[in-house]
Picture 1 (cartoon, rainbow, N blue to C red):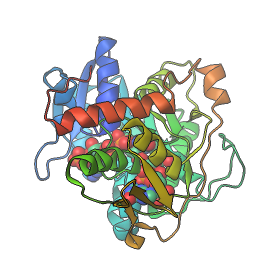
Picture 2: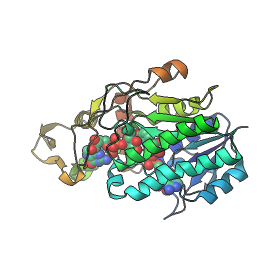
Picture 3: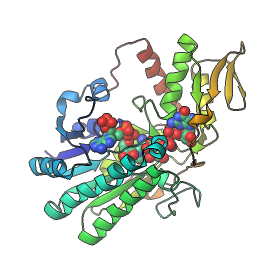
Picture 4: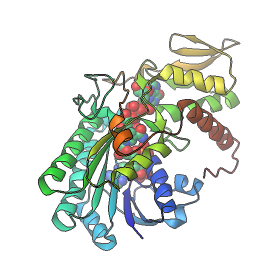
Length: 338
Ligand code: NAP
Ligand code: GDD
């Protein structure tokens, strides 16, 4: 039985990856940080919380990382833990950098010094491309990060590559484009929209959004965690872009959700009204970022060829699934996503 340690087990990807590894008969160890309480709601919705062995690890504490690895001796480590909200990174650049950059160094140092045979996955991001220098973006596209988050992840990406080359570690960096699901954090725009529109439908509460003009390459988290696992099953460690190769404007994601909910609407600029002239969505300038990433669209040819990876979900099926679960959640119906 293989043993995997997943940091960020309480997040969206941690949950989907845990589900995948359990289905492949792994023993799954989940690293969680002890702050204001444990956030197991995702793992509980998936019905897998009781199959995971939890450990207390904050990425900023090198000693507890080392202690956990000593105890578990995992075959694979998936480092998904991060301060992952781009917007917040402008207000909390130091916490972002400590966790997303030095936290990765803390893990890599334990691997290099004590357990060089452990396979390591680093959760890198299309945010590193930022103000893109070519379209679509692939593994050789120059990084031009536009936020403290993007900068912190670029550091961790280069560190992963450097430790692989310097110490011959099996360390991979997955450059993942945006991926969503019904268990996406409520602060991210797709989930904020699906949740906000269902709330508007039931209460009339107006949804406030920021810049709707940017484009993202949105995939489904379930497809993307499969790519993480595939990277660690290859003969050689490498870095891969994971994306769907289609771009959608935030405004069009809003349209798709409104249509799915059968809401009649008109746009006035970036604001949305219903057929009686009531506001559904208003713009809040405070939600604009000091620097925006206007366009992300990935070229995952390398992953398709070498990993034999393909996304199975489309954006339309993702929207349908997110709205369906959101409606169920609002009615407080029992949600069992498996
Ligand atoms: P998420 O839902 O925000 O989950 C982040 C996880 O990191 C949570 O479990 C969080 O724990 C944990 N964490 C934060 N700070 C920590 C610390 N100091 N020590 C230990 N754990 C800490 O993020 P996600 O969407 O699953 O993404 C997973 C990873 O992929 C992240 O590294 C993200 O930056 C990266 N990524 C995501 C996307 C995407 O579109 N989803 C795309 C590219 C890359 P709490 O529950 O305690 O907060
Ligand atoms: N969050 C948020 N909230 N975003 C908004 C809002 C709002 O009210 N209104 C407009 N947006 C716009 C943002 O300005 C951005 O252009 C776009 O919606 C997407 O924002 P997010 O959903 O917050 O995602 P992100 O692209 O910034 O970052 C996500 O994807 C990265 C991969 O490219 C995160 O998951 C990162 O952790 C990940 O690395």
